[in-house]
Length: 79
Image (cartoon, rainbow, N blue to C red; front, top):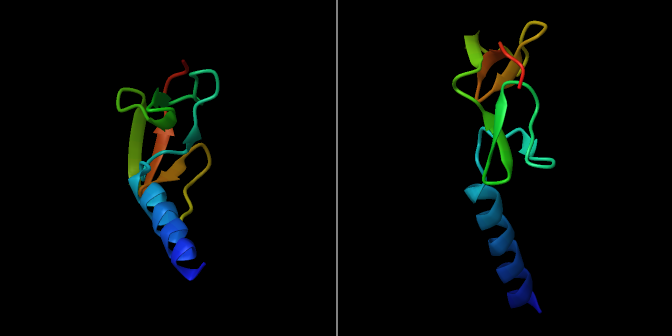
């Protein structure tokens, strides 16, 4: 039983580590929020539609900016 728990824990850790660190969530009907695109069923920043402000401070950014990968970004166009 303990071996099964170890195997399940290892599988969970591998799944978490393989997901994109910049993904903000899953795609819904192959769509994402403004400034993001659907890649491998995850919403990731669209490099053509974001503007970087600078580093996040305590994971916070000014209004209209999002903290992503320790950088404040602002979507600049809709989809």
